[in-house]
Image (cartoon, rainbow, N blue to C red; front, top):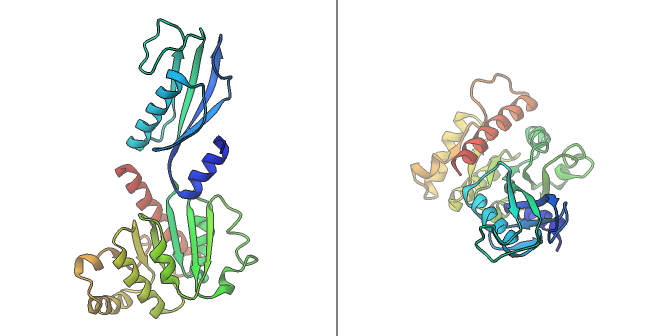
Length: 269
């Protein structure tokens, strides 16, 4: 695949990469300005010129990936016999500038239950660079006409109209953030149990009152979950102190709290 297909492939897979672009060429060089390649931790696509230039670009790009870097970086290569090299000489005689742009993996967020609150939350989250999974056991909640204002956003939206939403939760990528707000408390309980059995999710939030969560804690203890596991679920979900129970108000509160969580995790990586 070429560099553009490679970027789309990495985005679909939720994997990071670095886009390398030849931004300037003076004199003779293996590739022209505008040539691009994509570097992933274990693969590359396309080329910026081969030889020492490309090997050094790949090496530096992978160092940026390992460090979780966000900022772009510029490298300048003198292609002559006097230049210091690590991977063999290139004596074209020119000078090449290459821009490295890290492409962070998009976080995955799954909303279980696309009712009044879930729909408003999906509208907000769809404007963010996310893999947004919308899951509901009621197919009509995920009808294309209903979600026209959701699927046209920045997020990559994945629709899951399934009779057993817990199967989707079990298959989410590690590190995914889960928000549970279905129409059925029994379904919510099953989803909480499934989430706790994963152990590798980014965060788990449950909509509802303190009384609901107290009942759920009792049931989840009966299923074998200890207190440390139960503390991994946040309920009620959303930023504390924001008044109002309108769906849009709750959605904004939940989205803001999620953004704070994403920012903290990004800083830790």
